[in-house]
Amino acid sequence: MEYRTDGDAGDTWEKKAGSASMELPRRYRIPKSLTLYTLMAASVNGVLAYGLPLGIGLAESTATMVTVAWLAVIALVVVRILRVGTVVAEDGITRQGFLVRRHHLWSDVHEFELTDRKVVNTAYGIQVGSRYVVTVSIGPQRRRRILVFLDERAFAGLDRFQHELNAVAALWEQRRQASQ
Image (cartoon, rainbow, N blue to C red; front, top):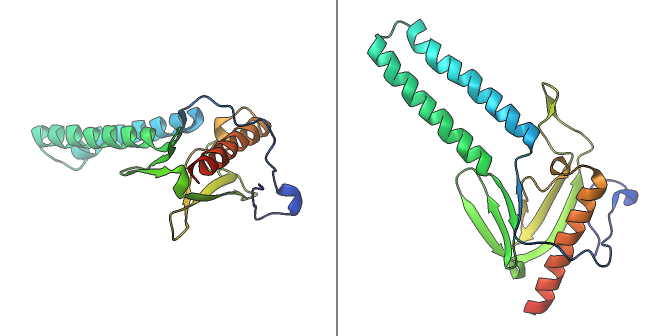
C-alpha cells in the first residue's frame, strides 16, 4: 500500500513490514504547544470579559452577570477544543469534532491519504497548522474526512510520525482483511 500525496513521487511513503504492532486505543489530541496557544487566547478573552462590561457603562451587578456568563462560555469552548481529536481502536476510528463524535468501523474505511501541504502555519511562534494532513475515505460514497491531530505536531520527529502512520495503515489493512 502506498500513501498518495499531492507532491512528487519522492514524497510517497510506503508501508513497512512489521509496523502493525501498536497499543490500542491510540488517542491523537491537540498538541501541547497548541494547548498553550488556546489557553493564552482564553486568558485574553477572560480579561476582555471582565473589563468590557464595566467599560461600556453597565451596572456593576449586570457587568458581573455578563462576565460570569462569558467566562462560562469561554471555559466550555476551551474544554470542547481540548477534546477534539482522533482515536484509533480495535474496531475502527473515532473522529471527535468540536460538537460531534463519529465512529467509523475499519470495514467502512476505504483508503488513507497523506497530503503534504508544503506550508507550516505559525502564530506567535507556535505551529498552529499541520504540514501533513491525513484523510480517509469513508462509507459507500467514499467521502474524504480529515483525521484531526494525527499529524507531525504530535511526534518528536517526522520519522516517528511516519512510523505511527504506517502502524495505523497496517492495522487498517489487517482489520479489513479479517472482515472480508
